[in-house]
Length: 199
Image (cartoon, rainbow, N blue to C red; front, side, top):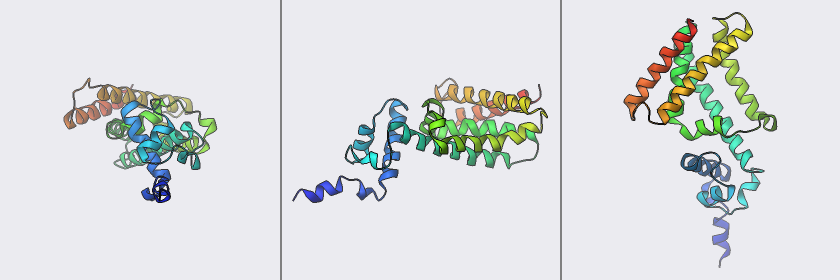
């Protein structure tokens, strides 16, 4: 009589074991950070056996790499929409910086996994590819402002670095809380990006 219960514990009642585990891990990252949980905890959160994750993920890092890849692709989609709002490269980089802040505020767990999990991209080809796609989207905009490839890359790094810092400050509550704080920080990021591009 116990076998039906055991079958339910395999996670198939979720309809998709892989995504159930990814959702559980994302929740745990939101609560504990990317280094603060185990695969066993993700399994319990998803309502599956501790052996279940190994059907899809070799280890915790493989699961995190899947989520980090998702994070990069979510950023790429958001940043592509931001760039599509105009043709002027200064305005495009300002829109990118604002979108960067919004991504960090709206997807804090994905943001933390993408930037703070310390994943080795040489081990995860899809993750490396997703990161390259992001650079390939943004770098041509910077190249319209700096003809030298190294200068263009440095410009992009400066804009992204400023946006990243402001996003982290917002997450830490330094600019207040709520939608007003987010909007103000988006404007700070855009303003800073414009200043950097005009140096």
